[in-house]
Length: 158
Image: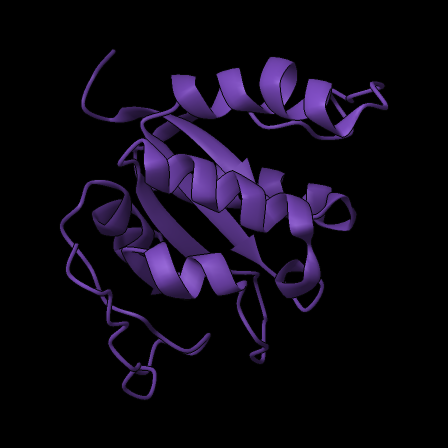
């Protein structure tokens, strides 16, 4: 696999499936090919047991990816699945990059992304690629301006 090809898992809500193709096309236009292991309408998941879905379908796909991209739309914040996927990626020390949907005007991000994300970027191929490669670690509004400072989470010493 070349430096321009990345194995990713795109965490999203299913209503945003069409945006995943747009995202991959955007990155490809700047020379990055993404191999996406996420579940979408092209590769549906017909299982019904949440435990089975997590351990046998989503878990291995997240494990395979080097990077998690979280596709941010207004519905993403309230998805228990998206938060679970982000937490799984965090436990494996994956790079976690939030990407605002094209044309987004802002909304709340999933709690797990706010806590564990490495970057949150607008619809800008160069910044997305830099974030995927670990070269950009900023949180931005959809228009590319910096987000307001975020509180630092404190964890008790053990």
